[in-house]
Amino acid sequence: MLDTSARLLRLLTLLQVRPHWATADLADRLGVAPRTVRRDVGRLRQLGYPVHATPGVAGGYRLGSGARLPPLLLDDAEAVAVAVALRAAAGGTVAGIEEPCLSALTKLEQVLPTRLRHRVATVPAYTVTTPPGGPRADPDVLATLAAACRDSVRLRVDYRTHDGRADLRTVEPHRLVHTGRRWYLVAWDVDRADWRTFRVDRLRPRTPAGPRVPPREPPTDAATLVTRGVADALWRYRARVRVHAPATAVADRVPPTWPVIAGDGTSCVLDAGADDPRRLAVYLAALDAEVEVPADAPELAAELRALALRCHRAANQTSAANQTGAANRASAANQSGAGAAGQAGRRTGRSPSTGSPASGSIPSR
Image (cartoon, rainbow, N blue to C red; front, side, top):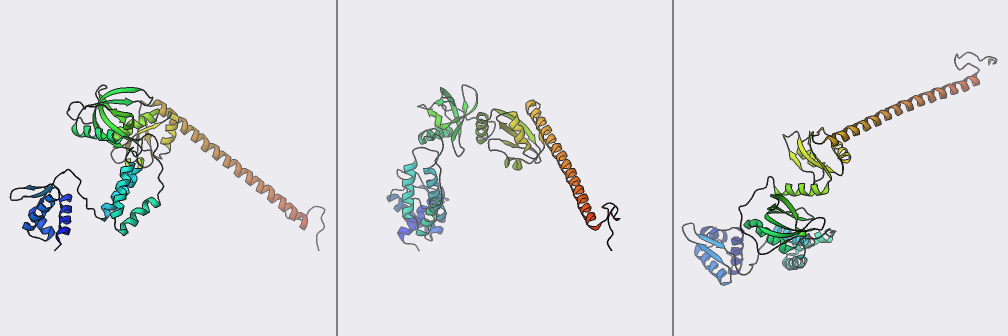
């Protein structure tokens, strides 16, 4: 049996990993009687941990939220994961959290076993991290927007557009999306009566929050809305084409800003973009798959035809050049052979064409 201190730590760990425990289950896990479990719960309460009891036949205990943070007991894999995540977050896309992340990481590394401390230290020692490009998101703004998404409340936000113009928007936040470089808010724009994506680093919520509203569901998932919004801002020309290849294969060949919509398994719809139709035609030709261009993109179809003609002419010119080169090489070989035969004939006194003694020559004896 564990001593009392070790048993209390074990009990605290069990209460953290499940929202509710039956008394009998806790007793079985700890290897003690239910009466001992009740005494240990009382000791945790005396130490300030809010352990709540649930009555009844299947009654038990659960750990509630308290005024202070209880010690978190992590296994080896969890400790390494937290350390790596803190290191990554310190140089991430959220401003102002570097110091808290490094402070928490220092505390964690101090109590790690030696075998784990070496594993955690190896990652930063052999990793080069480039600073995040562009402005970073404010953690307070992220927290406010996340709460608005959770509570389905309306917000008024000051937003700076891509051209630097200040604008006041009334939005109903739906989801936050992190693309790796930036944070975006997907929200229903009340004034424009449509779904919009907003860069969080350009946004400042006004307080207090507005009223609660019925939650809305966008026509597609939040990540797709952000991808399309970023692509619309990135490319000057866009076209939606059907590609006769599986969606997974196409997605591996195109930029992440080109949404791929799965089809019947043998084809998919590609929302592609480029600076102009000519460049897009080149990109689509590089897919090495049959492409159907819709009727509303005649300029793209024209560029694909022009590209096909240029490729056809290049292939024909290459073929003609190869034929001419082969003929020239054959002619040169014939001339070289004739010259060699002539020299041999002069040495032997025979005609290079007939093999008979050359005219005026003296036969050898």
